[in-house]
Each structure stands twice: as structure tokens, then as C-alpha cells.
Image (cartoon, rainbow, N blue to C red; front, side, top):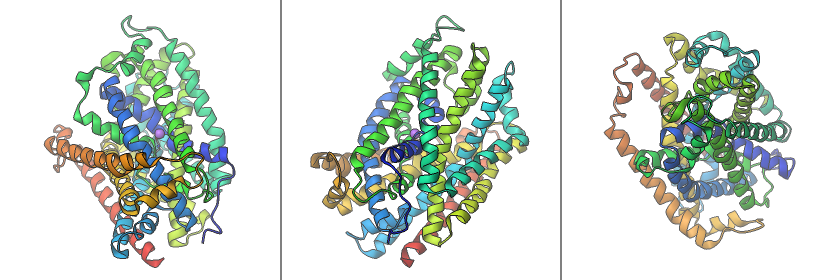
Length: 509
Ligand code: PHE
Ligand code: NA
């Protein structure tokens, strides 16, 4: 039943599309501020641990269930998990498991875009402002507040969304793959230009803040900074950056030939993503910010990419060009990842509800306008850039939803399907995942570590009082509470819709 499914056009196109899926705002916007906030080098220890013990094994699982699902006519994670699970457990239980997975896949690909597409829009807007000198000589914090509170700037968001819709409409090989072939090489070239600029920057502001010291901050761990919160955050970042726990890797893998080498391809995807994150972002964004902001100033927030870096570009020689290079890089990175989420939902409409691709792309465009509305509104209504709704949605996704879906996928393959899961993974592979690896990681360390980390996070969050109706981190700023609660309500509603929809789709098949 996979006769009419679209397929990747070429091997290099497939790898670039997968890398495009993984390499995103997570690498260049999320990683630098998260690493800096969690102690720099001290963060890198749990980060690499999570990469090897959780990230790589989960990546292999997603390719495996994705390729198998595609061969059986499925492009979404709910039915994919269902057809694996029903090999081992009763159809009733398998439907529940599949529906929970489908609910999270749907939930994340909808919810991430309540903010992700806005950052894509900001990147485009900031790229234009870099070229025209729009933020030169303006305090970059004030510029950012003005930017997000001015409704005119929503035009960049809409241009971004429309371009995404147009690309997805063209299909897998002619749309997604074609864009990835142009944008991915550009991302690496731009990243290298910025990294070279960063290490040759010296100490322009304070003799103690050289960019080399900034590099040292990332690579020289100060173990006193290592906390249980940073361990959990590192795991969340690994899921986010590798696009795991949302179904979009499974979806891309569903367009593979049945004997495509997925072992090599998943390792290549992880390597390309980590090069962009640790080497390029770690050697450009962090040292540049450090050189201009110092060790305290770099502990930025969500705004590091937009508030700290423009400051840097206005004072740097050739700043307009470097600014444009940086923001176009962000735009391309975000675009090639958002395409994957967009395509997931279009595939869902196509395969589970019988909506044709063109119409589906249009419907998702409208859906993304709706789910993105609260963030547009928060800036405009409050006149501030606290982005509370945004932060709340990102917290639940990054710390819970992705991790829970990843856990369920690993459990399905490694604990339910067991040894046949490894056979399926190795089918067509140039080299094979050894049995000891599957036993040690997939069947033991990976799921156990995820469960332990989920427990730690829940405990920390509970102790911090963040489960309360007015969470502690609001610090008595009253108008923020409704935005937090609105975000939570939307998360719950989207998950329920996803569950019901997936449940019906699986039953119908
Ligand atoms: N992995 C991508 C990134 O690093 C994109 C992504 C993140 C996609 C979260 C979906 C959800 O930005
Ligand atoms: Na990434």
C-alpha cells in the first residue's frame, strides 16, 4: 500500500533533507543560550552523555520505525508505533500506545510552531534590518521590544509561513529536498564565516573578555556549575536539536526505499547536526557574545540571538554584513526544520483524513496562523517582550513531551519487538549495530536514563513550585499568569485532539 508514496530523489538529497530537519534554531538560537545559562563547559558533560546514551540510540529507533511504517503506507508516528506494538501486545493496548504517541507527535508539530515560526519571521526581519542598518546605534534590547510589539513586523512571519507552505505543497523530492540542497550548504558556509570572524575578534570591549576566553568558557568545564537541572536540560536539548520525540524523523524516514542503509544515514545526520551545534554555534555565537558581553552578560535568555548579538554587530567592523549573514543563517536553519513539521501535518491530513496535499498545505498555513496568534498578541497587547506564553510552551515541549514520546518509541522497539527490532534496524545497512550495543543501550541505558531524568525534572519542578496555578517563576508579576495558564490549556487541548484523531485513524485502518 505504499505505491503512491513520494520518495527522496537522491542519496545526497536525503541526507541534506534529514540534516535540514535536524539543524535548526535549536542549534544556533537555543543551544548557545542554554549552554551559557547552564555553566558553559559544565553543561557539555551531561550534553555529550545524553547525546551518546539517549540521542543516538533514539535516532536509530526513529529511522527504523519510520522506514518500516512508510513501507506499510504510514507517515505519522501513531500508526507506526501501533503496527510495531501489535506484534507483541494485544491490539487494544497497541491502539492506546499508538494513540498516545500520535497525540504527542501531533501536539508537538502544532505547538512548536506557536513560537518556532515567529523566530523564523524575526530572523528574516532582522536580516533585512541588518542590511538596511535598521538597528545600528539603537539599544538592542529596546529594538527587540519595539520589534515584537509592532504589528507591522508580522509581515515577515507571514512571508515565512507562506514560503513554507509553498515548499511543502511541491512535495517531498521537488519541494523539501530542493530547498535543503540550497539552504544546507549555505548554513555551513555562513557558520564557518562567523566562526572565523569570532576567533579573530580579540578583546574589543574589555581586555579580560577575549573571544578565546569565550571558547575556553565552553570547553573548560567548571564542575561546581553542574546541577541536576542542567542534566535534565541537556537531555531536553539533545531531543530538541536532533528533532527526536516529535515524529518528524520517522516521517522523513517513511519516504525511504525499504532497503536504504539507515544505520549510516542516522549517524551522518547526528554528525552533521552536532558539527553545526557544537563546532559552528559553539565557536561563533558563544565567543562573539562573550567578547562583547562578558561572562555574566552572556547568561542570556531566549533573546540572546536577537538582543545580545545585534549589539555586537553594530560595534563590529563590517557588522551589517556579518549581521545579515547571521540572521540569514538563522532563517535558513529554522526554515528547513519547520518544513519537516509542516510536512508531518500535511502527511497526517493526507493519510489519515484523505485531504489532498495542496489543500492540506493551505489548511496547515491557517492552523499555524491560529496557533501563532497568542505570541503575536502577547507582544502587541502587553507592549513588552517577556514572551511568557512562548517560554511556557517551550518548557513543556522540551522537558516533557519530546522525552516521553522518545521513551515510548524506544520501549516499543527494544522492549516489545525486542530482537526483531535490531534485525529491522540493520536491514540494508553497510555496517550493523552490534547486538551488545542494542542490549546495553536500547534495552537498558537509554530507557532507564530517560525515566530517571523525567523523575528528576518532575521533582525539581515540583519543589520550585512551577506546577502551581501561579508558578513561582512569575515572581509576582500578575499579568503574566493568564499567559502561562493559557499556554497550558492550549497544550492540553491540542494533545486531546491529537489523541482522538489518532485513535480514530488507527481504528479505521
Ligand atoms: N531539530 C531542529 C532544531 O534544532 C528543529 C526542531 C525542533 C523541530 C523542535 C521540531 C521541534 O531546531
Ligand atoms: Na538541531
